[in-house]
Length: 200
Image 1 (cartoon, rainbow, N blue to C red):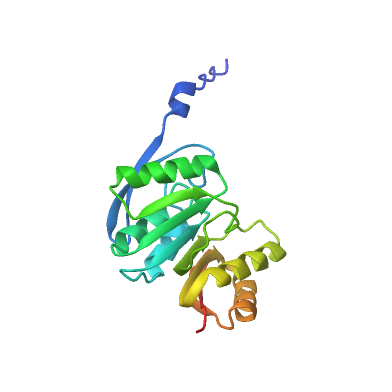
Image 2 (cartoon, one colour):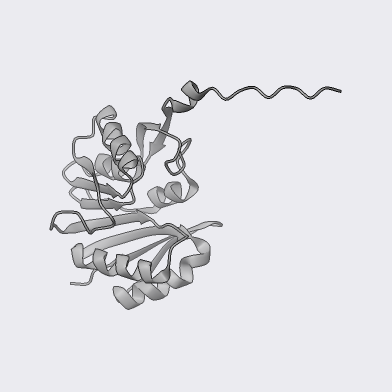
């Protein structure tokens, strides 16, 4: 029996934006994404868990680290109408999509810029820092990242992370060491949301 010929890839279709909608923190948002960005067809499970269990104040000055195409930062911006959000990523394609998604959703209090962690951002402090931590990096890199965030948080500022649950004990130890405190906000089957506060 002859094998069915494989259909050729439609490259024009692959180059088109992936478009979907989701309701995050009570706000319906439209996202345009593309192949090569993290979780391009839907909001990933870790981000969903984080957004369900994160508290945002109406006037928070927030930073979203590793923003991708913008779901976390945009959700915070919608929930903090008197505040502002700086979204950063080291991928220029992510920055392009995050800024375009803000415009599409009429979000004027958030913008994205290119930076390796906090290295290239202006000298300013934040009341809220948030990140969906990558699982595949060194513990030394995490520590550098956490100390940099602590330096930029205002007294009483909160730092939320979502991470694969296998790293939750490490996060607990690192937060206690760097911030002097740790709160396990929510542990799911695959991901855990944790928070640290910069003590006054």
